[in-house]
Image 1 (spheres, rainbow, N blue to C red):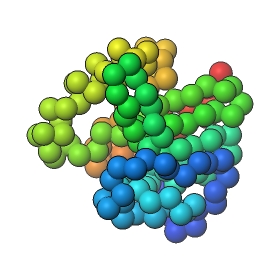
Image 2 (image 1 turned 60 degrees about the horizontal axis):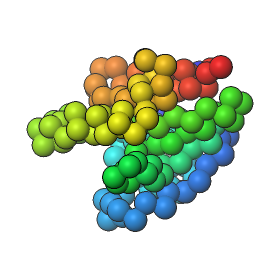
Image 3 (image 1 turned 30 degrees about the vertical axis):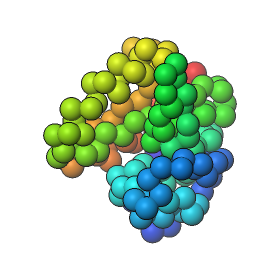
Image 4 (image 1 turned 180 degrees about the vertical axis):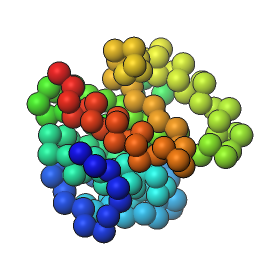
Length: 148
């Protein structure tokens, strides 16, 4: 498995197009399957997910908790194991307001039954780091694809 953006994306994954009513005007990046995404980072992640045969991927699927509904970046079903992963890519690391909201979001997810994959759960969190972005994403996708 090698993750580098190319112009030739072969869609092997199953997918459902987003039904999120929010952010429509902010979605400017088109994925290989026609899905419109907000950021280039999300685009690269999404296209890489689409190349994985054993996954079903949805961008910004509704995740309803006890008190509200959020639209995490990616909801991924491993078709072999039936494990579902919620992936939040926290890419706007240059925005103080955005960074200040992250702890509350993480507490909300935990309060609604999601634990980070590092603790045996199904919540994937990635932060944008220019030097390690592709390596970090490849590692996460490999973990999801290889999950038992």
